[in-house]
Image: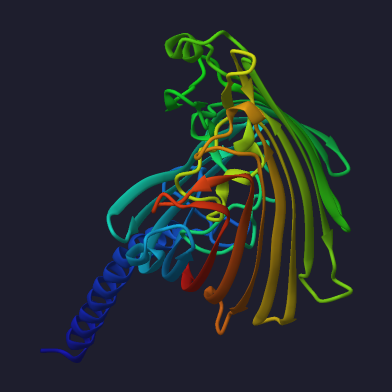
Length: 413
């Protein structure tokens, strides 16, 4: 074979080999490009969002796992139930999807919880859609403000109004930190029913949703909110019990203020809030304590035998909470409230009375690494009755109280 032919064959083989390598490399490129597209970050809404493949919607997946170790001592229960040690575990999954539209951000949010203790209880904590100022679905009531922000625990008390509700709401943004909201809300979880000396307690669900409105401000120094609610009390319940129609409208007002105390410590805050309810006591938080005996009737309406009509009860509370950071990893919380419930004196018996109550508590919180929180919290509460009521033994008592300790750990992701 001539040298010229040998050189030609070697060159042709080399070119063919390079072509095959190039073809294989090219075949890898679309795979790598697709992988890069799949994890494309969406920075429009903050950290943790990424684009859903093939769409312009950004999604954030998160949640938490929490375990609570509880001790609860109540003065009014039988001895075997008075001191209770119990454990609770909860897992939560959160999905937050957002898309930019010509009307602003279209958002849908879900938080699903599963709690295990003496029994397993799944719950849809939140599920709502927000679009062009409207909110539809289950969300924190627009009546609430402080909403027990740093009172810890799966099974903890309420200091003030704190409830999720299914709503249809519109929020107007006036700029400079001011917003106003009008909301129609399902208040069935806030109904405390009717109490009658002869018939006991009865449900008093309404035919109409509650009407809620608020004015809210958020600024560098803190913020405030003023809220109001009007709700129907179903007067068909009065007919079933055989009494005359009395009050059939309940209402409440709330005012709260938040101060950012960065001069005291970075991240420090102080909340102060007051609420009043007439035929709407759950909008004050007075029904959320362990202090009143569990046989005690906390109702929105009581039968007054002196007048022969059903009359609404009234309640008010004032609450406060201070959070102080000793360091970026360690912070403490002090909280408390005071409240009074007033019912017609003629309706007092062994299960009902006007009373006053208070709760005080504190917690120490440690964040050793990002998104991991350890909490130790203690709470004491006491109720004092204007007329003696019966405990579980049938003994009359003028007051009742509780002590609660919660040790908790939560990992957020």
